[in-house]
Structure formats: structure tokens, C-alpha cells
Amino acid sequence: MQHRLEEAVLRTVLYADVFSFALTPAEIHHFLIHDRPTDAAAIEEILISSARLRALLHYESGYVTAQGRLELIARRLERERAAQVLWPLAQQYGVWLARLPFVRMVALTGALAVRNPSGQRDDLDYLLIVLPRRVWLARAFSILLVRLARRRGIEICPNYVLAANMLTQQRQDIFVAHEVAQMVPLYGHDLYWRLRAENAWVSAHLPNASGVFYMEPERPTGRVWRTLKRLLEWMLSGRLGDWLEGWERRRKLRRFMPDIQRASSAAQLDEHQIKGHFNDHGRRVLQQYDERLRRHKLTPQPDPILGIPGD
Image 1 (spheres, helix red, strand yellow):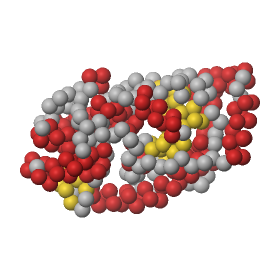
Image 2 (image 1 turned 90 degrees about the horizontal axis):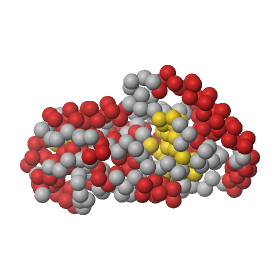
Image 3 (image 1 turned 180 degrees about the horizontal axis):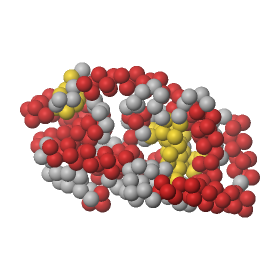
Image 4 (image 1 turned 180 degrees about the vertical axis):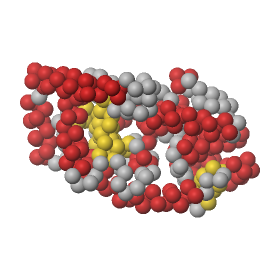
């Protein structure tokens, strides 16, 4: 049992190492890459008592890194300071995104969601869940907000827009599991929990990450804005909205087609979702993670549909 838990802790730290990120014991517990749930006390105890982990990991000032990566602790502290600057902005723009027509859930994603921004001018990444058959119109409204924010020197990226009737993720590897588990819902908490329920496969990778690590209360969007939102949705609910949705989808697909066809693209653009990931960051992450696993003589990640192998 101890051997399996040691390997789970090591896998978890090595995954974070891909992102040059030092972890706290609480984060190791929450995002533990294991085949069963484990309590937090067991993580604390094994970090202190395991001779194997003491040889492979560095535990100092409340942070854990791989051996030889002690500089990540100072980097983590620097990025925490950047996160403190960006977090209120992310909340503020999350409210503005929630005010847009057809938007039913807003979640903070990307590096900031785990307090790991590259600096105080890092992008604010969001997932939007929207009404079915209005994915492209919802994105069009969000792009107006993107342009307004850019005038203030703030880069917001609603780079994943998903219909509320298509919540199950088709790609089910550790990278996507982390993306689901680490997102921070800012608006539409009920829909967030539906998303988690429809992606219960995440627990096969991250059995402790059933909740939100950085939970935020849902902020009100304001009565006037809710009224305006309902009015715009009513105006665009019929044939006019259907025509505009189709026109916007066809227009953008023509524009994005060269990027979609690149070998490195992981973009998914259709009537149900707009996932503008034209460079497959997830594939690179998994390759770098597997390299670290092999160096430590751990079993590499298998095909996503098979889950994580037992030890």
C-alpha cells in the first residue's frame, strides 16, 4: 500500500513539474493521480516518513518539488503574487461574461485557476457553457468583451464555448481530467456540478478532486443586466437567431479552416462547441509527463480510454 501511494505522490509532483509548479501537500492530496481516494493525513505522513520520496522529492517551506527543482519554490511565490493581482480581475470579467446573452456558466480555467500565471499580464482563460443552438452567437458577444478589455491592457480568452447539452468530454486523458478538476466556477454553479457529474470519468484519474480547490461564491450579475440579457435572448430566440447563428458559424469556420487543418491542432469547432485550441498543448504536456515518468521508471500514461494502469 505504501509503495502505491509513494508512486501516486511522485506521479502527481512530476505532472506539476511539467508546468514548473511547486505543490503544497494540500494540492498533492486534491490532485493526487491515483486509483483510489486517499485522505490528506496519509499524504502528509508519507511525505515525511518515506525514504524513497525524500530521495526523489524536495519538501521545504510548505512546498514540494522534484529533486533538482528547488528554484520552483521561489517561482511559485512570485506567481502567487501575480495571481493575487489577476484574481480580482478574473472575477470581475467573469461577471461581465455571465451578463452576456445565452451564457449559463462561466468558469476560470488555465494557469490562473491553479494560481500559476506567468506574470501579472497573463491571459484570463474561461470556459463558457451556453444555451444549445447559440454557441456561435454567445462567442460573438464574448469577443466584443474581449476587445473592450484589450483596450484596458487586459487579455481575456473565452477559448472554450460549450453547449449545455454536450457536457461530456470525449477526450478522457489526465490532461483533460486536470482541466475539468481545476476549473473555478464563477457563475452557474448548478450547471458546473452537472458538468462534473457528466464527466465522472475524471475520478478514475483524480479520485480526490471531487470538489473545487479554490471555490468562489457566485456573484450577482445585477437586475438591470439580467433584464437586458433576457430581452436580447428573446429577440434572438427564433428564426433571426437561427439565421445569425448559422451565418456566424459558417463565416468563422471559413476563417479558421487553415488553422484547424494543421497537424498540431486540437481545435473542435461545430454547432455544439468552439474549442479554439489550434496548438495541441495537451499532447505536448502528456509527452513531457511521460518522459518524466520513464526517467523515474514509472509506467507511462496509457491510451486515455483505458485509464491509469495499476501498479
